[in-house]
Length: 198
Image 1 (cartoon, one colour):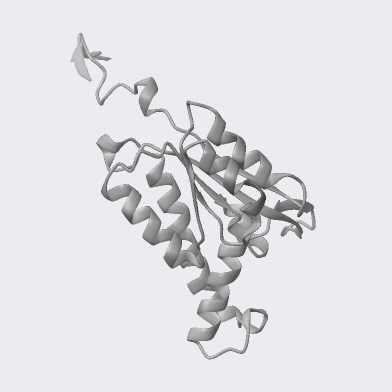
Image 2 (tube, one colour):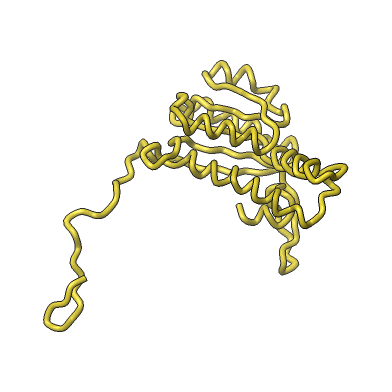
């Protein structure tokens, strides 16, 4: 901004700063949630049939993809099992390290990843099971899961900016949660209020 005749004058450069986004750099991040049997896995499998999103790397923590494994593999996609957040992060690190040829990452379903992460934290602090996790340890669960959510954002970023340039599709179970204003909402099942952050 310069000054001319005592007034502020805006000078517009000949070019806008930064790099123009190309169509090839555009990716989507998609979260959907519903009850068991609602068709989440079936919907997630459709991404393997569109040339804009195929082939798909399908991470299946629950074993719920059994009915679509042959269909996915027949379309050139791959299905792998995962456990808690650490295993999802390990896949993310590999996807960021080089181009494996996958256009889309599907995680079906993330509620189970959250549950296994909660159980791992509980066991680390000497608790009997995930339901017995005390409130003071929830921050550890949340931070571990936030790392995975940040990973998804990074995977969807263009390779030129350190991402993987992939589409990211995440499925989760649904649950009803009452917020601080006593409003009931259907949210992804990530344990209460944390799901509102997604």
